[in-house]
Image 1: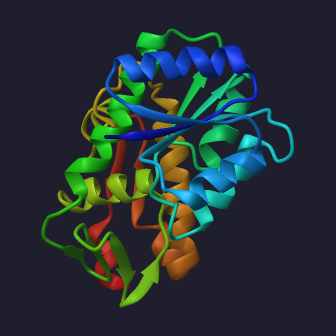
Image 2 (image 1 turned 45 degrees about the horizontal axis):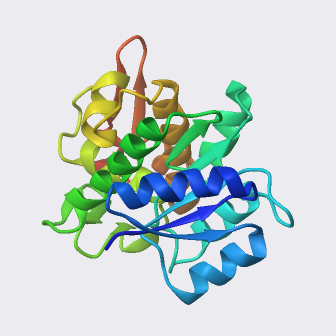
Length: 235
């Protein structure tokens, strides 16, 4: 059974989420603070994490960054739950590694829909043939990306985004098209989310290959984004 970790210090909210998860066929475990959350993940890797921002001890932001930096936990889908609704907060949450950002108060049906979406998004790339364009190679089966043979570290959303772009180099995708193809059920997700993850993907590629890596993802003004095959071939 799919196991969901609920990291939430308000008992009533945690219980409401747990009840809805149970009715939807999920197993759940609750952690009321950051220490308990770390212990729960160490004891058994969950299939997804519902993470409150404001927690006793470390914040949800700190936990998300820590889990994303750990090879054992970096691929776990994280949905951040918070009352912080400003755009800057959403961007900060996504930059910390969250796959989705849900503002309180939220509808349990919406929460379940978003959870199903992130779980579905992880599944399609669990297998498949490696894709290579110039210096860049992505192996879905091994969940590995390399630049001229050197490993490139990517979060799960950036991995899916790069995989999609690699399969059609030089093709321009609008934000809406990327939401549809990479995020799937995007009815609740803003197009601004695409910009955040493209920025993060460029930073990851820049860390691995300098300016040549950052140039691999090109912004087409007024249209969207594309993979720059010429930049990759010249690298």
